[in-house]
Every structure is written in structure tokens, then in C-alpha cells.
Amino acid sequence: MAGEKIAVGSVEIVSVSDGQGDMSPAEVFPASDIRIWQTEYADLLDDAGLIHPRFGSFVLYSGGKTVLVDTGLGGPDGTLLTQLADSGVERRAVDLVVLTHIHPDHVGWNLSDGSPTFPAARYLVSKTDWDHWTQPEVRSQAPHVDAQMLPLESLDVLDLIQDEYDVTAEIKTVPTPGHTPGHVSLLISSAGESAFVLGDVAHSPAQAQYTDWSPGFDTDPDLARDTRHSVLDHLEEGSTLVASGHFPHPGFGRFVRSGERRIWRPE
Ligand SMILES: [Zn+2]
Image (cartoon, rainbow, N blue to C red):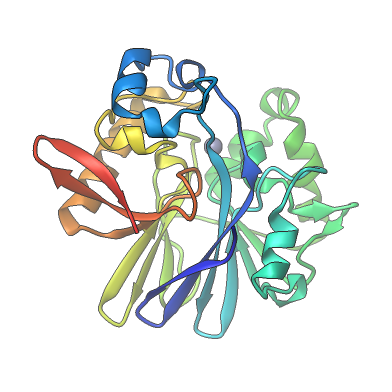
């Protein structure tokens, strides 16, 4: 499946994926309780008890610009380029690539054989994340930085952004730190409607209710948890449309109240 679309005012969001992971929920969320997964979220588990976070990207059409949010894990099994083509998105038609953060499953198709995969695009990433991941001691443990990030600078296609940055007149970045130091989400506002591209503020619909469950790979778990609580509270309050790359396809839905619980309601 690829190319599901949703409209937000005059902005169109298209959902595409680069594949999905196979992970034990207890490994991803060390604080989670496997019995809760088995009883309350059995629909997210396969027969082996694994969860499958997607490597999802979104294409945003706004004001004549084509914006790609995140570029997947990359590699021979990656499906992003096929899904983009199947959705009618030509690589050279992408004007802007916005990276929510510098993790390997979000930057994997920045480059292909050393050249920008999206040859006409500027690549936008938070300066805070860039400064963190390019530190020698961090970079030496993170091969994706040398492979998929540093060449963007020498190829002169990189723009480092800070604070709330206007990607287009209808789309701006919102700092949502903790998962990584410079992690950003995107707020879309158009013709009285709004939507929020979540990034890795959350990785599973189970975190709608169990918002304290932090993935083991948050850079700053306490800050990530605080960010997750405040962002999800705010999105629930506004019943805001959300686009989430790691949630089940196509990743569109809302955080809503159902009795005592907060749930993810796909749409
Ligand atoms: Zn991440």
C-alpha cells in the first residue's frame, strides 16, 4: 500500500513507507509490560509477539512546493523510491527534504551512490541535531552520519534551521526535543484547518494511553517523556489531525478520549 492521501485546507499529505521493522515490544519500550501488550494491543502484535513500526515518510504539497518529510532507512530492501514513483512523485520534483531528526531510519535515502537522491532539493535539518550528531565521539558510533548526512554539506544542498522555521507559508517546524536533541515536528495550517506531522514524538499507538513508555533509543528520556506528554495532551485537546511515520499505515489519525483512556483513532 502506498500513496494514501489526506487534505488539510489546501495542503495535501501523501503517506509512503520505506518498509517496516520487526521488534520485540519489550526491547523497544523497556518500561512496558508485555501483558498489557498481549491484552490491550494484541492487534499490534504478530504471531511471534513482535511489533512492526513502519519507516514512514510524508509528501506535503503546499503552495506549489513538494516537501518530503524524512527519507526512510534506505538499503536494498527499502521501498520508498518505488512508493514515491507509484504515488506520482518524481525524485527531481521534490523541492525540500525536511528531516525530523538524524536517526538512521529517517535519513536513509538522502543520498544514492553519493549523490542527492532528490537532485533539485534543499535538505533541511535542525542545527541542534546537526551539532549533536557531528561531534566526533557521537559520529564515530553512528555510521549513518558519515554515509547520509555529512556529504550534504560538501554537496552544498544542506540548510541548518533553528526554532520555528517556515518551510512554506503553510508549514512550519516545531521543536519537540528529547528523542534527539534537535528533533522537530511539523505544523500544517491552511484555510482554517491544521495537522501535525509527529516525527518520533511517539513510536506506537500504545503510547496514546501509556505515554510514559519511552523507547530505549531516546537521547534524553526525561525530556522526551515531557515532550511526549505535552504534545499528545495538546493534540488531544485540539483533536488535531496527526500524521505519524511509525504508526500503522497510512499513519493518519487523532489522539482522542475514550472513557478513561486516550486512544489513537486512525482515519
Ligand atoms: Zn528516531
